[in-house]
Image (tube, rainbow, N blue to C red; front, side, top):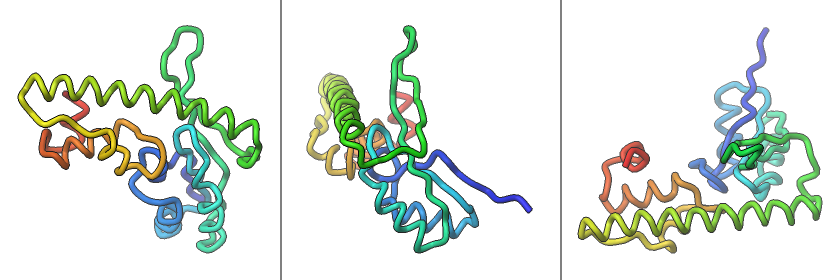
Length: 161
C-alpha cells in the first residue's frame, strides 16, 4: 500500500492561498499521510500546522523554503526540513531573508507602477498588496492585486506581462 506525502506546500504566510490549518485539513482530506509547509523565508505558521497535523492525523514535518544565491546562480530555492523552528539564530537569519524579499518585492511593485502610469492606469498601493499576504509579500500577492484592480484578467496574465 502506498502512502502519499507532499513535502513542498505553502500557506498564506508566503505564496499559498490558505492558512496552515486549512492546508493540513485539505492534506488529510486528500488522503495524504505526511506533509511539510515550506513557506518562503519564514516558519511563522509551523506551530499551527503541527497542531493541525495532530488534529487531522497527518504527520507534519517542519519545513522552510529559502531563496539563495550560489556560485552566480540567482534565486535558487532550497528546501530545509526537520529543524528547531524556535531557534533564535534561525529566526534572526530568516528575518534577514524576509527583509531582502520585502525590498525586492517593493522594487517589483515600483516597476509595475511605472508601467501602469505609462499606460495611464492607477498604480498599486504597497499597503493593498501587503493586505493580501498573511506574512511576506510575494509575486502572487502582486498578481492578485493586479487582478483585483482589473489591470489583468488573471494571475497568469500578470506573470506574463
